Image (cartoon, rainbow, N blue to C red; front, side, top):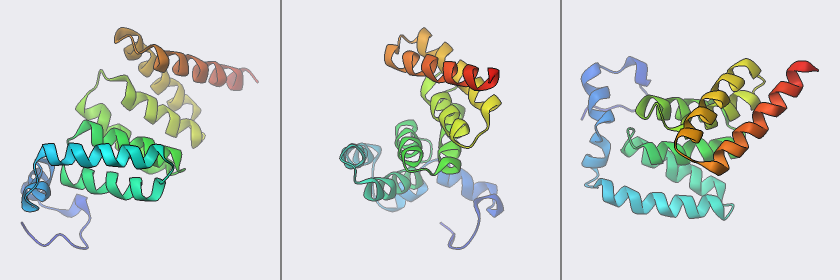
Amino acid sequence: MENLVGQRIENLPESVTTQLWNGALRDELGLKSEDLQIALGVANMKNKAGNSLTALRMYMALVLCEPSNFHCLQGLANCTLKNGLYEAALEASSAMIVLKPKNPFGYYFSGSACLAMGHFAEAREDMADALKFADADEHHALSGECRRLLQQLDVRKSA
C-alpha cells in the first residue's frame, strides 16, 4: 500500500481508494471482519458508558479499517452526533445511506445532524425517509422518534 500520510482522500488514485474501501488497512494489520465486530462491541459499551472520546477514537479506527461496514459507520454517526460533531455525523450517515438505502438509521442520523445544524428542510426530508423505512421494517421506537422530530419541525415551520 502506498504512503497515504498527509494526502486527502479526494487526491488519492482510484486504485488506492478501492483498496481502502475493500479493507486494505484491516488486511495490512492482519485483522478480520470478525475481529472488528469485537472492537465494535467494546466501542458501543464505551459510548453507552459515557466514555465518548475513547468510543470516538475506536469508531474512527474501525471505519478506517473497514469503511464499508455499516455498523461501524452507524456507531461513528451516533457518537459524533452525541458529541456535537454534526458535519462528521452527516458524513458517516451519508455513507450509511449509500450502503443501505432502505435502512432508516442512516436517514435518522442525517436528519438529526441537519436539524442540529439548522438545515430544517433537509432534516424534514431525511426524517420523512427515516419514518417511511422505519415503519416498513417495524422499528417502532425509531418510528416514534421520527414522528416526534417531524412534529417539532412542523411547529418550527408554522411559527
